[in-house]
Length: 148
Image (cartoon, rainbow, N blue to C red):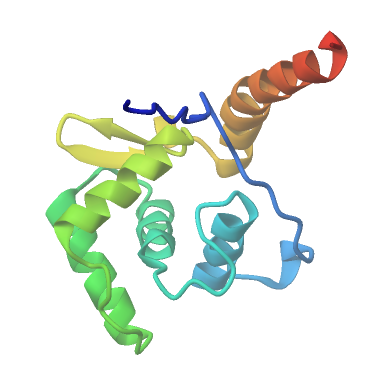
């Protein structure tokens, strides 16, 4: 007889981590800590192309095509003397999808930009905190108060 294994697939999830105050962080290091803080990057992870993608989009503040993003990432990583790991277009697309799932990036036609060209703080409050986080906390609260 064939057994079925139930999989618990979350409807939504977010990882939040608290790090030191970001006032002394700038550029790529600031974006890296931001990615770590919201679970887009794992501590000690050397595959950090998502940091470069977000950094380029934040710095440019305009719509960029996939080839433009790739070109800028390669140039940045070479300038910083970082390995060119994960710069394949398929991986960049996958990381852009992760940024889109958290409402940080949107796709307009065949280009990508920071959602509605908003400031990151506004995006956090409007999209992540009010929409995403509230819905997750509400559902977790239901589990706590349901009882047996």
